[in-house]
Length: 270
Image 1 (cartoon, one colour):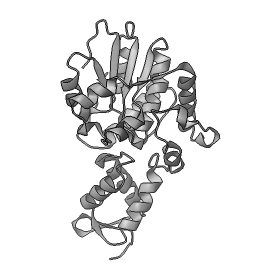
Image 2 (image 1 turned 180 degrees about the vertical axis):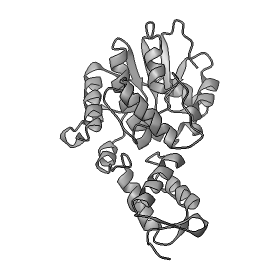
Image 3 (image 1 turned 30 degrees about the horizontal axis):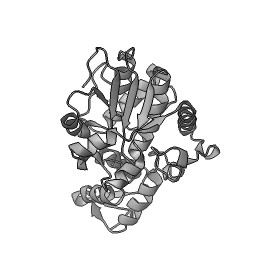
Image 4 (image 1 turned 120 degrees about the horizontal axis):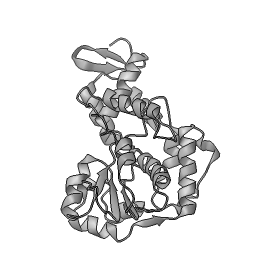
């Protein structure tokens, strides 16, 4: 929920799922929901251009026929139009999984350029481990309140380093840059492993492709396949819509085959 008035602090939320929980814990805080998935689909360092905004909206709408982004409601458009004049502090609420970590990297890069005067804070990965709750959906009010007290301020040097990493991710040349992740407590130490498993279906998608092919050695219903991937690879953070897009692409490229009752196999005959 955002009000176009004087706002000294603004929270960027992980996604729609956490906004009700967050609102219960912080009744008077202003927030914007980060409705994006930059680990998949076309990406660009400059997200403000009409071309990339059009491509991103087309990608998001391709995930499900029910998704229709109304004019001026796409995340980047919302951020561009927002009145940042009074904002002094930005708090990023992103989870440790790959999906959210890529979004957080993009957010740090984008926000540091759109409002360079604001301080940006991120939640240390260690907090999730400390309370043994890897996702915000498991948080109670006290978990949120306690988290607010341990946010890590991202200084200018760290922002430049993360911004450079986002450039490399957008150019698919992250091999040439290595951050000392011990200096970045808000980044998952597995980030480079995930980046190394990038395919045309998205960051970390090679891991899923291999697992899907192995699982489909024996025919399996598509919904059951998606459910198993969600359980087995929750650390990637891909949702059912993103998994469906990967599976559909693999079928199109004849890496998977569909039979009766929506059963899927990695072999062309049963």
